[in-house]
Length: 466
View 1: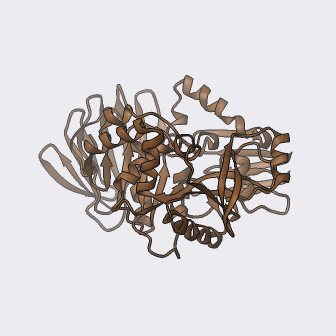
View 2: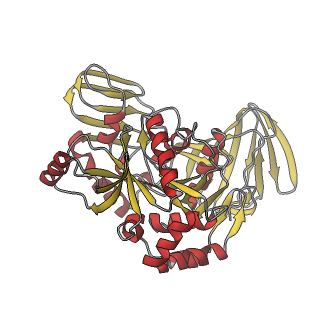
View 3: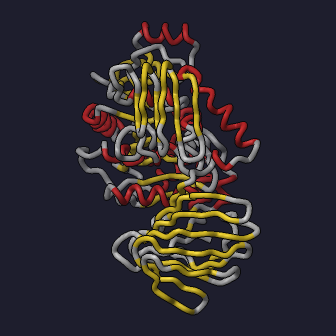
């Protein structure tokens, strides 16, 4: 069985922590591990698993690769989507990339919380048995409340003791309908997790959505292998229709079956959902970071950098990051998309990136920004180096505060150590490498008429960036 990790979401409802270039699946929201890491770690104990296959947005590729490496989960490949086309094309790419058409794909979104890993593993093992019998298996979450934010699966005739034919999929209901579903006992939340043979899914996709399959085949025919990544033919993939697995296949096939799953599942689609699955104090507050809460109840309080204090409030969400602060009624957090849409219209950078930006060689943290200058703290991993590059509009000063830097300026190389500095004039080709065994930390001061990250001309790069 091949775990297929779908990691294409942007998680805008968890802004300002989740952003388009660093979305929620790459954040440690419910444990010390990120959500994509937890998705794979909860599989430990399942037998005969092959290496996972990841599918993600091209701009997230290095985060995906690094986070898998941190938990020793060596992916067979990470397929890069040049544009989002929903789950049906993503899974088609995985099925076409499987080692064998007989392989069972266990399709898992990277941003779900499951607190009972053992119950999930039991369901996954049962799903594999059904998938090997040419069923297309989905997991229906046993509901514990009338929920209007999820679609539902109506269970039909029993296949065996704990699986059912799918009678129908239904859209998100209103509250009265959701209450009726809960009382009925035959309706389950649609989890978006699946298991099926690669060839069975492709057979059904060709029957119901042949345009998707054709476009995915063409995009893989023009693929390029780049380190751990598979780059698709962008033109072919852009021509692919956008559709979900449910709409493209599961609602039409006669082979759909459902396994009920009661394993503490949550799709963490909002701050209130995250509050539901987070440990709380005696007053019902979920607290992370430097927070003092006085006479405060049922709130989610998250500090990334600064002290948060609250007094005499309840049912709030307060999220502090280095460049944004969200204060919201916990019952209104589903509407955060309105904030994100407004920021997008005004072309604000706060919807895309954090002040701390991860790169394949390490990360940088923006300390201060002015009209013609900005200051960054740059951390380079041992043995890693930045690309050989130059800038048309800015010069740079580098001051080493920890470790040793190997600096290239045009054709000259030099070593600089703690408390030493160097100057990179505008237009000079340069490179920074950490030759040591500890992280290299430098303070970079940029000055010039334009300081955007797109003012980089790369001549050589270890990470395949253009």
